[in-house]
Length: 96
Length: 299
Image (tube, rainbow over all chains, first blue to last red; front, side, top):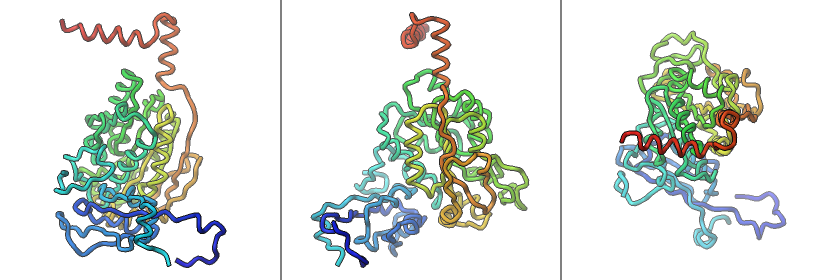
């Protein structure tokens, strides 16, 4: 992400990060989460689940900001978003 | 281990009957999102879960009572509100929530709805409106917009539909709101606010029904209907309920329309009881006395 200008407290404020966890066998491929994710994190996978649907997966996991919209909008109770700890964020280094 | 054969669990599973999962709702149906919003707002409102009762009637939405791991009852068709009324009057401590569909609450149970609103009985009614009778194959209902095609109106509906917020507000509800299943965050906030209020609270939630309604009205998937809600919803808090009719392919006005205070049925009942029996017979003692009488009656 490119910032047009730097805010004064940029060193102190850290963007929140989350990790999307999908219970693959619950997904019914309604695509709500794919369409409504503000960061376009999720995508349909090519694999099949037990019901014969293509479950979603986090295609851009580094973009997730833990807003929890996919979790709430998923009608199958299949997605949960876990906030990442600061160390974990550093491990999976995000922004350049 | 859940039914899907994996150890993984969802955080909301603690309030769902996992043996009933996966639910019967079609792919693209909005009911799961609404149930999630409801459970999430129950958690956020901090209400004691042992005091919450979910009552529902018949229909796709009526299945919700069977899916939540709370005290719940799946009543006969249209009679969710009378059952909930009885619960609330018998045990005023309970937080009674009626979670049902438009066919149940507005069609067959329409009379109960207006009278419960008139009496201002302390309960939250979440009415999921999908514009048709979904479970039975998509027949014309009292909420189907003019011109919409359903199984029993193949050339278009010519009956004027109810505007649910207008109906509830005119009947005397103290809290009236409408959202779609796309507005999950706002719906969650509204349900939380409604749960913490007293009186008859009515929330209409518009939900997609791709299988029986959408595919006959050029919105063949749930996602098409959700996109339509996103593009055509106008948030107008405090709008006059008589201006919030829904037209086919028109704009949907959503928001919180009514939020007033009025004495509830229990308040007025208490007042009358006080006047009739005086302060020597407070309500708690009477209920205990009655309970012992009822308990000893079979002997």
